[in-house]
Image (cartoon, rainbow, N blue to C red; front, side, top):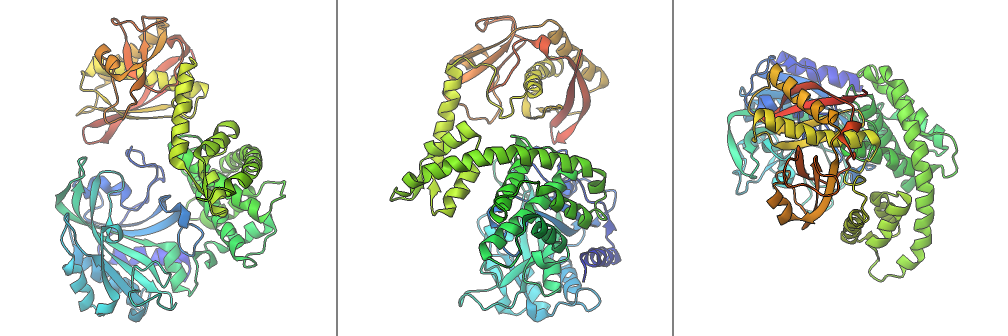
Length: 608
């Protein structure tokens, strides 16, 4: 069965069961500051799982592109992927456990659909804990369908509980379906859910019964929902009798492109095989992120940082396959990804040039960094290997980061290849000390955000003026709830219970531009936290601050922060411009809801 056929069959089956086929969403969540990427099909549907009515009705089905990096270290094994496609069906207060399980079973086993023999299936269910009871109901449904007791396992929350997608939101117990890959059991306790490789998870039915609140408590949802997810890549693997997702038609052209680019023939050497799998997975993931309609660029912040790490890991593994290559390896592999997936996601073809340019730029930049960093690592290695505890000093790891721009994650990977660990706590201490020395050196306008480009610095300063203007127009309740800044725009979340009027938006915009026009000085002082609080400096709710903090004031002081008359006074890490007149014209592009009780503003700075 091809992956296009699987996708079509899934949608056809659930459409025949009264589900409306809805469109998948972007990989980059628009209204959720708690996560960087869409991690599952349910993610864009959170408002509807919480009670909002969906225009498609109570039964929905779709396929959704997803990115998960929580188990990035597992990528390269036969089944874990960073980017994957998820088939899903949902009940929004309609059917629940019994009907959901029976539909899953019919689609999996019926000759009309996938025709998987029942003896190849095993399942897991939630064993129960202090938050929710043991799921005997699901287990009984599976028994009634012919799954024998020895292939039904009760597992804890870490195995059989899904959600929330971020820190808060809908969640609940799940039941997971596994395919027996035919390997020998690893021991007497081996069964569905065992990580030995005998059982491969292909589908997951989640019973959304709870909402995890900000205090970490699980509150019962008024409306019980079902959220399911079947991984296309894994299911195609088992349906066609393969041992790995990399053997499927989804990956074969990409793997062949990698072979041609690197000169390494897959299957020759196990460790290099893993590097080729990681290379293909990461390039595929990077292409999907860059080609997304809301695609981000590699950076040192948020989703851009994850993208940068994926590209750089891909480059490192490509060098293991072809240490002396001089031409780009990213381009031919990325072209293969586009050819495989663009008929499903046409935005990849539309953004082909952007994808190629971003990958080439990042590859060139990182190869220079990598060469220097790896050379220095090799110089340090002999002394590190003498350490009887097999631990590399965090100070040395920080030296590689600080002097050569070598990411600590890559230092950890290099160290692991030699049986070493990096003292991460010591690295973090050295990093903090570096920040403190920067403050002491008077580099007031060079710190905090990892991206200190001119435009990011301007936008960061603009958020202070925006925050102050919102509080003046809407009231002191308009507190910052989060922000996201790139070199192209700012995004600012704040507490407010209703949409702003056009008049309020204009008043805020005018106030910010008034302060810019006054060309006010931006002053920074380092002081203890208590002094800052006594001055009335605003702090981001929930943020943990050091005893010594940076306080930024916008006007009227020049050398020291005045106690009165400040337009803005906030605890902040920077970076900032020295005068507001450098910002340009402030323009609010959009004001919208972010989450319950939180609004979001997107704004840009225009040249005067």
